[in-house]
Amino acid sequence: MPLIKPFRDNKGRLKAGTIPGYDVLRDFFETEIGENPYIIKDISKILSTVSINQNEEDEIYGNIYEILFTKHKIVITNMCDDNAPGLEMEFATFKEEFNTWLLFVKK
Image 1 (cartoon, helix red, strand yellow):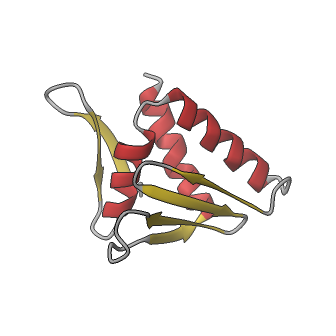
Image 2: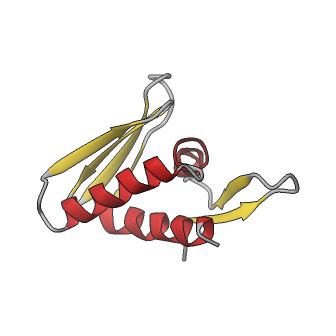
């Protein structure tokens, strides 16, 4: 079952529905990735290089969130609010969610 479901609101903005407990993932996809081709390209490259062991780990800094990629997990951290919850999830799960997002953006 997908953790996020991309959709467009009535004004055409890209949004993500999510299941409880994954608000950080929803916010990350909506605010940091969106439809930005540069971020999409960077994340695609990182997912590829980390998964084939070219890099042990890599990270991206966005406007609000930092995301750390390792072979086994990803960690999303809010850089603006130390008290905001973060999110840790399996690398493969994040990759599936990213691919779902990417397919929707390419429509």
